[in-house]
Image (cartoon, rainbow, N blue to C red; front, side):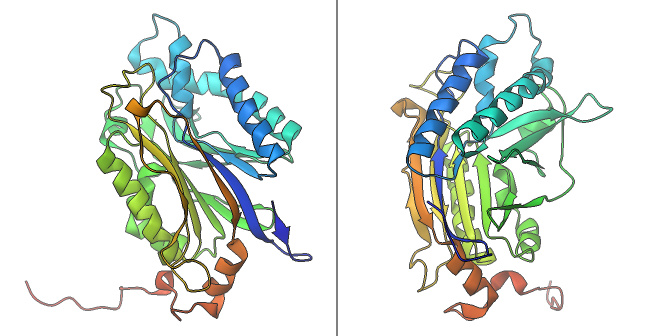
Length: 310
């Protein structure tokens, strides 16, 4: 459900955060899209405004990749498949009236053999927004599945009157980036993620919790479960979902609005967390002077400080 004031941004927004399981074998793109459509249909029935999926949800497509596809061509192949998939998902979003963030899908860099790890946001009215991952993991840096390039900017877009940004997984951990984001008066930050171990899960979700207070805004994070074509009993990939808010007496005493417990691959889950009536309007008011704490952490800079000692 969305509640808005006349001629202004919405006061509340409802989201479905789908901690998609990457382990099940996917026979073809059509069957993968059918699962996405089922989730969109369910979201529409419950008056949810958007379905949010995790980083590299598209990695399930590798189950039907050509048998002779070289590892170094995997990302390029996913990028090629992504062009058709995005067109289909755009149509599904419009059909059900529910926006879709389908995780990240590799995107070819013009004039290069590299791809970026790109998050997409498909609005139900047909608008498309994107955000490239800014910092790369050692695995992405190594290029084992093909060369990956870093993103070079922050894209802010308007959705239902809200100022929205997407931040991909590892980018949640970088303080300098969030100091910049805190200056942008954002109403909602969406984080598709994929963690290979419980430690990575704790870093991403722990940082997202603190960033909500730092930026005084709503931060939603969703992580993938397991790995494509893996072995659930032994795979260490842990997923989950959560919506975090600033710790303010008018909003949340602990900053946790809704959360799933960590989802290990061995559990075989592909759980959905419905975040009902996220209070983005009150977050906006405390960000603009109504905070019980009477401070805006992101507005403070340490540049003026002198450092003394060894």
